[in-house]
Image (cartoon, rainbow, N blue to C red):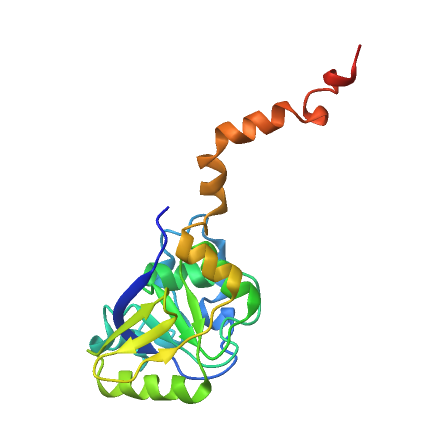
Length: 205
C-alpha cells in the first residue's frame, strides 16, 4: 500500500461534543453482513424522519455534497467499538476527519481503514467550521509530512496525530491483513522454525 502524504477536499462540519457511534450509524444497521451499503446510513436518524423524508442536516445539504473532510468537535466517535461507524463515513465519501478529540477505539478503527483522524485546538476547529459553513467550496489540504492543515487564502494550522497512527498513514501500513498477505513467504519461513507448529520434530532424536 502507498502511504498518504497529502489529502485535499472540501469540508463538511458536524457540530457538537460527544457524538457517539450510535448517532453516526444506528444499531439496526449493524445486522448487515457486509459493509457495502454502509454509505447510505451515516447519521440516518438525524437526516430522515420515520417516513424517509429528509431533515435539515449537513449531510443532506446540496452545497456539501462531495465534501470529503469532516470537521467535528470533542470526543467524536465515543460509545461502542463498532467498526460500522467509520465504514459508513468512509463509504459516504469522507476521506479524513479533523476534530478536537476522538474516542480511541473509533480513531483506531478509522486508521485501519486508511482514514486519517487529526486534532486541532478548540478555537482552531471553530474557525474552520465557520469558514466551511460560510464557504462550502473552500479547499482544505491536510499535509501529513508537515502536519499542517491549509485553507485557501487562510493561515495554516498545525495539527496533532497519534504517533502510531501517523506512521501507519504516512507509510501505508494501516491494513494489517494486507501486511500479512504481502509477507506470506516470510511468515511461512518463520512458521517452519517454530517447534509448536511442527510437532516439536526438531527436538526429537
